[in-house]
Amino acid sequence: MENFWSSPPVALSIFLALAYGLYRLGGALAAKGEHSANKHLPYTGGEDPLPVPSVLTYHAFFRLALLFAILHVAALVLSTLPRHVPSYRLALIYLVGAGISVFVLTGEEEE
Image 1 (cartoon, rainbow, N blue to C red):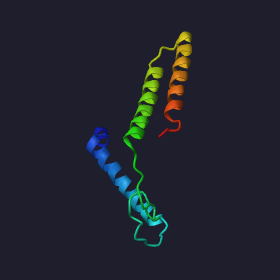
Image 2 (cartoon, helix red, strand yellow):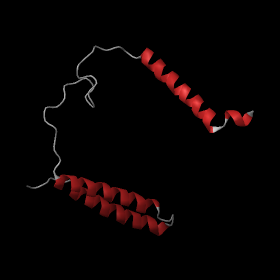
Image 3 (cartoon, rainbow, N blue to C red):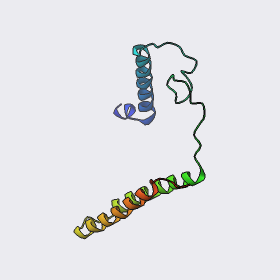
Image 4 (cartoon, helix red, strand yellow):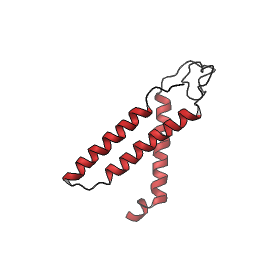
């Protein structure tokens, strides 16, 4: 009988029932606001939507993509370094280089 309650289908059913109960309880306890036509629009929270969406140019997009790539590679390299004393110096040098790259990429864009 112990294996029955810990089996994946039974545990899934129990957690789904628990999640649904919490969802219904939260809906019952939530504050009731005034109805707005824009209330259910995505990412507005009941406010008027912006008239013109901002357009990201290709140059700005690739700068942002390169920034995230540098930060992710830096995290990967630093997390795989061995825990020896000389590696901390190497990590500091690598972080300074990544910091300079991030500083350059987040600087003002010249037109």
